[in-house]
Image 1 (cartoon, rainbow, N blue to C red):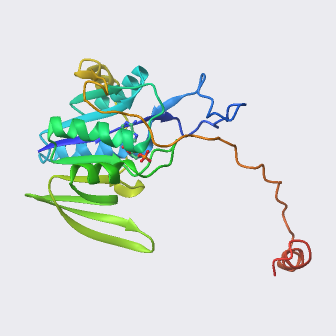
Image 2: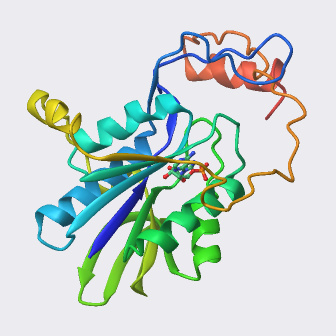
Length: 249
Ligand code: AMP
């Protein structure tokens, strides 16, 4: 079966982001960008399915600026076979991305689409669910285990206070949680090989998708600075401060 993984270019998780002075967004000038960690897990899972002989082809898809080719090449170096970049330099809503991915799903007809549970820049946690709704496919979100058997898929989901296992009929959409797998590092020979793998570029207009948003971004603010904490010497001192200074007990 064909497996598609959706990958997003985001600010690297080690970067301390700065909000632009006019509050219009986050400053991306000279900032290190990377493959969204949950998308890396999605690619790893797809590649493992190929290594087990379950997947026949792994296609990675990204919606983003021309530079998102870097993250697609990383995904190819991790073992994906082919990449598609839907080129858009706009800040797109999750719904617009889901519509674009749906157009690629219609074209590629994958049996399984794996996305991250969330992108660490926008923290939306929406795209996989919206893609499932638009495609009419079954969905298993926050997956920590996948088992493929014939025409169905067993997904163990991380839910509050435990695990839930659901059986989905294929084609299906899965979103990855942190414990699904530990992504490999791309080896130098695989990075070199990835440069020659096919990468197709396509526009939203060519897919016939309007990316006009119904949301307007009003303001981006950094969280209020917190005052420094102190170390207390004993439990008695802690209780005294909670009672008399913080007045919480
Ligand atoms: P979000 O709903 O924005 O938190 O993103 C959840 C997942 O949807 C990500 O981990 C990706 O797998 C996918 N996704 C979101 N935005 C994009 C994008 N611009 N290009 C490709 N995949 C995306």
